[in-house]
Amino acid sequence: MLQTSIPARLDRLPWSGWHWRVVIALGVSWLLDGLEVTVVGALGPALQRPETLGLSAGEIGWAASAYIGGAVLGALVFGRLADSLGRKRMFLVTLAVYLAATVLTAFSFDLWSFALCRALTGFGIGGEYAAINSAIDELIPARLRGTVDLAVNGTFWVGAALGAALSVLLLGYFPPEWGWRCAFLLGGVLGFAILLVRRHVPESPRWLIRHGRVEEAERVVEEIERQVGVSEKTQTTLSMRILPAPGWMEIARLMLTRYRRRALLGISLMASQALFYNAIFFTYALVLARFYDIADDRVGYYIFPFALGNFLGPLVLGRLFDSIGRRRMIAATYALAGLGLMVVGYLFSAEKLSAVQLALCWSVIFFVASAAASSAYLTVSEIFPVEMRAVAISLFYAAGTALGGFAGPPLYGAIIEGGSRDALFGAYALAGALMCAAAGVALRLGVDAERKPLEEVCPPLGCEPRLRASS
Image (cartoon, rainbow, N blue to C red; front, side, top):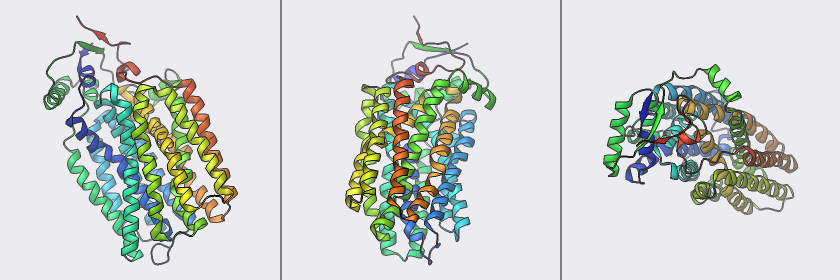
């Protein structure tokens, strides 16, 4: 039986410059995802031109689905590897995959090459979600985990704003046949810069002790404590056995038995938020072009307020998930976001909103919805044991994205191409209703994980049921 104080030592650390460096180095995963999704969304009308790739709205939707499909596969592959080979190794590999794939996208020449490159880019980004979420949760003090997780997830929208700015700049000042290619090349440059910074982030000590590498974990924590300026040792210890990594069959058994209620909670939150976002974001540029005749090089301006609301939501509301609590805040944000989408969808179908008014409405709604979606990732990353944390994140990300997101882009793309506002409102209403249903599930099955150590929220599989204080 192994006894260690490492989890308690990590949780009692004061917030420091070291934590800022970790959050910046790892949190940029969401920035890259936001950049990728927004660049393709904002460039959608330009990609329909014959001098670029000449794609239809439906084909752009299928390319978005290829990205999502790649992300699903990447999450499953790298999530399993992050639990067996380590968080650090995987968050370096997945970033390298993203870097190579986004550069290759700049050289695509037809629908199939573009879709393949998008799938490979998604493969890297999907792997990032599993490795990064688990690493951040295991390094951030328990009392701040909700606040930091939501803020980090919100940086997706910094990437979205950056992608919008790139689309405005490159489409406005470069020929269309070259501007879209430059956007993807610049994403590769950003990825390379992040790779250099990320090399200095240590392996998760919680993952190291789970694999019996206690001396290495001690060295990592001692170095962190030295940088933070903490020398006093905590007396709280954790007793656990080192168990072999659970296989897929064992993981499935645990999900269907011991963690059945938590599994239902995770899939409800992930699937509903995926469909909600895909209902709007993947095809927003197409809506502006089709229904409001917004020029290609002006689309980015309408994404800025949308991105701003999405970024500020988790930043402002995140601390409430640690103070008011997970269950109540998740239920409230999901319900408000769902109802808001249905109201705005109706106003859109009745032609009562201008393009500017629609952008402002989305900004307000997604101020709340972004916090809700971020809380889904927070939830699935903290309610399962360390032995299967990354693979649990990957499973729920993959299942939720497949159920809520894979069919969304081509479906909404086809509806927009058909030109029916009423049909689009029906699709919006469906997404809103699912968010309200997920709010009910959260209220019923939610886990009160606020300010609690990960090992208390869900003890390791080889752990005694609770932490104990040694004499």
